[in-house]
Length: 131
Image 1 (cartoon, rainbow, N blue to C red):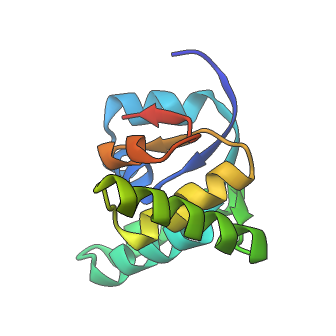
Image 2 (cartoon, helix red, strand yellow):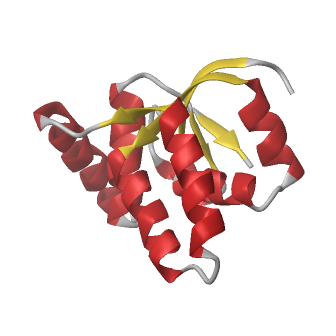
């Protein structure tokens, strides 16, 4: 896999990485700058709360967070969220709200998004790194 300078990560990509999925491990090894949308971090913390192995998962998440840049929403993100959601609804292709926020943050930062969820492909102008 080619080296990727910068990428945003959906929680689905992080989960695959934590599970040792080869494509995700290879992708993570090739990214120079990792960006995590705040919403994805919340989803990861939810997974941590529900995990049967909290100690291991806490270590993994803390390690990742220490290396990642945080993407936080602002007024521009909210505007992008509304534009994306309106287009998705008009096209009859709604996706989960959290994923719309994640897509808006990735687009706002002009970053490709690593994700397993195929519905991100419905978001115009979003470059996807599929897993």
